[in-house]
Image (cartoon, rainbow, N blue to C red):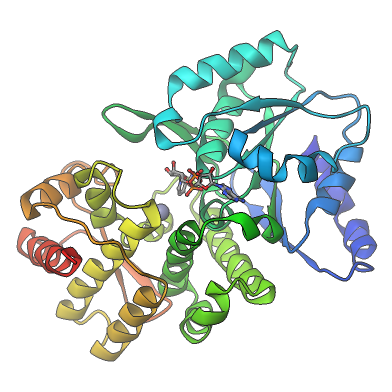
Length: 385
Ligand SMILES: NC(=O)c1ccc[n+]([C@@H]2O[C@H](COP(=O)([O-])OP(=O)(O)OC[C@H]3O[C@@H](n4cnc5c(N)ncnc54)[C@H](O)[C@@H]3O)[C@@H](O)[C@H]2O)c1
Ligand SMILES: [Zn+2]
């Protein structure tokens, strides 16, 4: 298994690669059911190449999208020995295609191409390819191994780590899925060169979130270095991405199934998801909606005093620094209703994440309708543009 190999080979591989000018960070993810590594660096393809060289004898498939393949397919294929090139499958771009129908189609393609239980699937793309590819791997022949090679900042810092896979229903996003961890993740910062600016910013909001809820040093770094980070300075990006992944790996390691601690990752997401739903998932990118959701949550934190005014102001300024946040319109009623339907709620209780200062957060269940309405109205007034 790739996981075992990755583990046994870690020490020698690190020595081997210490000779390269670019350093690759290895971040371990250890949960109750999984144990794997995330490799992060400005060129992780040599590490991928080395690991693929040891996979002889097994069929390798790659799921990507035509857009990403056109940009980076050749670079990706260099990681495979001649004669052992993976078979490519494609998913059309967009949230509309993150559907069970695509999983069935792709499973049919895997079967037609002779994929068996020992085959390996590599998801090479953004969060949509990663989530759907992971889900395909979770259910094809009751589960095959898969590797994540995330190509968006959001997928690198968030969706590729933690084992949540899935697809959308008409009734809502990510309503079907499975926990199925990858056997390894390769987050290559080089591929972010071609990422549109807006997508980069949207992913960075999740990193600001990581700093606010759990890593004060990451927050301070992002507070001070917004210009450098937005200019894609490789060292600055690497620092942000590695710290964000470390935070997520640590949280998921302690609470794989989101029964407690992992809920803090939903900071900004109660109202953020509601904003996405109320705007038909068209107006805002996920990270942008979450940025608005974090600003709304900070309004509640400030009023309750879970963080000081000064801390709230710093957090707000830092979120805004990674903008612009696109304007949107929605009715407060719609937002509150959508927040009530959030799938993180349990048995009628509304769970809400509030920062306690910078680098620490708490999940509360007593946010009142009035507090939520005030936050929703405040954010709507600000978002009108
Ligand atoms: N599993 C999880 O824990 C988790 C967490 C957060 C989000 N998600 C999911 O992730 C998805 C969103 O992921 P996303 O933001 O990566 O969106 P995405 O996969 O749609 O990618 C965004 C856009 O960037 C393009 N792109 C990707 N890599 C590129 C590159 N290197 N250069 C140029 N263009 C590139 C894609 O073609 C696409 O148009 C959602 O479906 C969300 O539900 C999952
Ligand atoms: Zn998110």
